[in-house]
Length: 168
Image (tube, rainbow, N blue to C red; front, side, top):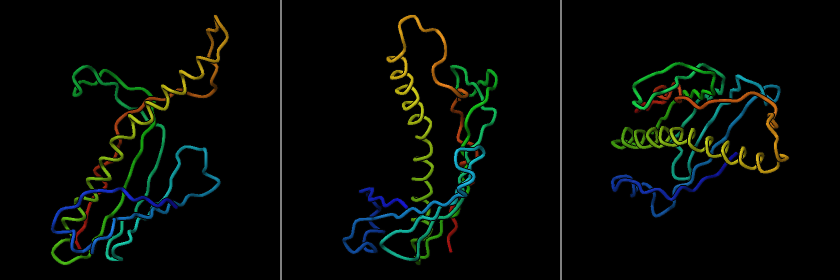
């Protein structure tokens, strides 16, 4: 369970619903313990907030190995494929606030897409930092691989279009 207070700016039409409160999200993730550390790895998520019980986000995240495109200088140019890590997110956002539900859902869905869209850069930075630290500890002249396990590439986020809103 993760509690987040993002300090986000909401549209003026949504602010009266908040009654001066700061938005807070509570994200609960569940997975089978036997699946930890294995691919594919699936977990369910459910996110609620402290403002209203009339809004929730729920779904499934699957992390797996899959062929991902190797892009050329022009992002529309695919030069081949390689094995990489793919994250597929499928979920539903439901906000039951008369007249505002669809607008709030669209904001939530866009924020989810933006967050998962940043993930490849975050992981790429982590991998680069990790590799630099490992390289700094290698003996002079070392030419082998010091970190066991497969390499991976970050590709597109897979089924991001599966994250959608539904106005109820």
